[in-house]
Length: 257
Ligand code: SF4
Ligand code: SF4
Figure 1 (spheres, protein in one colour):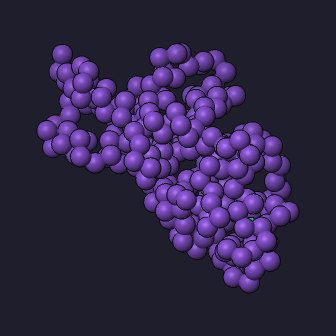
Figure 2 (cartoon, rainbow, N blue to C red; figure 1 turned 30 degrees about the vertical axis):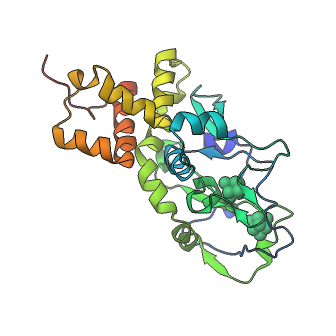
């Protein structure tokens, strides 16, 4: 059984697992008795692209967003520092309003997937055959609605492919087997690099353009201009750099000594 499912305490049998073609009935709209009930008392883990989208929608720097709206979570197995949304004192998400999600256009990936959850096999034989499951909470009236979806249709309507594409290299990093080796405890420097390269885009920009970074790595003028002007490119460049820094993958060009 894959570790991700074990980690979040689920024990799914094969019938419960869904594929892209599996169907389910679901509808969510204002007026349902449960409206907004799902936006509290929960852990919403953030991906790098979530942080980028949300900090920009709020007009904040990455450091401001991280400090105001998130809290760190240290992953038991890998010891990696991840971020989750900080809830309000009432236990509700701070973005929930009577009209729904204040940041709906830029809501995190986990909120887009809901009520679908996804799992990733980590045993070699099944890598690549990820699967889905339904998160059925008692209060949720959405499953009583008529509209039928395939998982693929749900993913499309929630723009999940866009998020998966932007986060792809980062997902490869956090699922890299080396991160889960009991013999390989990451040092303080690696953990700081991981955090900056994952979440603190403004700090990473300063690191690239205001340190010796460009004396060490060969980044041509065209790419430098792209990194200065396009935050998504900068985020994906940070993930390539993490692959080099953490696993020595040949994702970066070194300048000649
Ligand atoms: S970000 Fe929006 S959709 Fe997600 S829990 Fe908060 S209010 Fe709900
Ligand atoms: S139908 Fe489910 S997802 Fe929609 S508001 Fe109600 S509890 Fe939340």
